[in-house]
Image 1 (cartoon, rainbow, N blue to C red):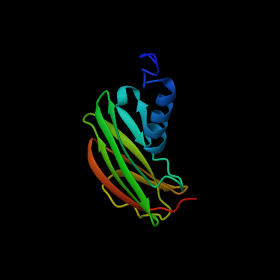
Image 2 (cartoon, rainbow, N blue to C red):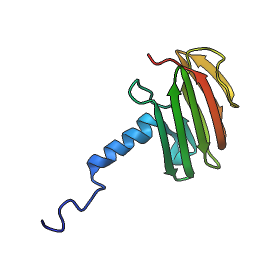
Image 3 (cartoon, helix red, strand yellow):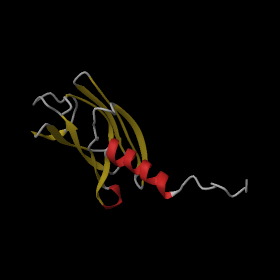
Length: 129
């Protein structure tokens, strides 16, 4: 074989898979330029019941580690310095969010809240549709 055969594993096709896992499954999304404000909205499905992801943004590492098991959704989130985040988590039972956040709102099977930089753990009661 020629030594140049398949020498680039950073092919566009692989990037699409990485983007799907980071932005779709882990749910990391930028709201304001330069990752000043981000949204964490995990993409749950019946087939994927856990995800661990770290994304090196312009402001630092954003990490998401979530698990869904027996109607309970657990998530650990790390937000870098000088960044705020809106979190949107599955929640089928109002007032079931466990964790510290501000601006908590329940609607349409989800809970939305605001967090500043730091490390967080949240838990909700959530059933998959």
